[in-house]
Image 1 (tube, rainbow, N blue to C red):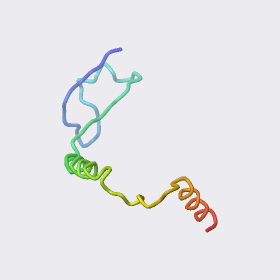
Image 2 (tube, one colour; image 1 turned 90 degrees about the horizontal axis):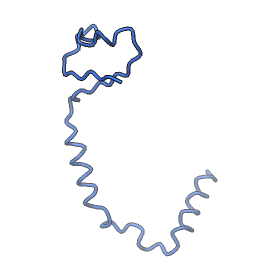
Image 3 (cartoon, rainbow, N blue to C red; image 1 turned 90 degrees about the vertical axis):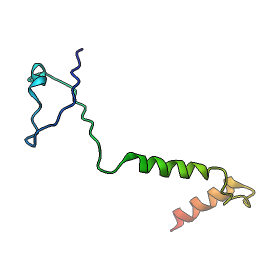
Length: 80
């Protein structure tokens, strides 16, 4: 298997650059990576902030039998 790796700007007509000529007419796997307009770092920061809360929120600390609690919730959903 041969790979062609190149960083280029694809014209607005969507055609592949001539450097891919040897792949024309053949079965090929094309992977396109491009920078999104909104930076990924924002979502990474949000994930990091969320992970800081892991184990600190004790919302269900008063529930003694968690399985019974879950069962009761499911029963309420199916009854509706």
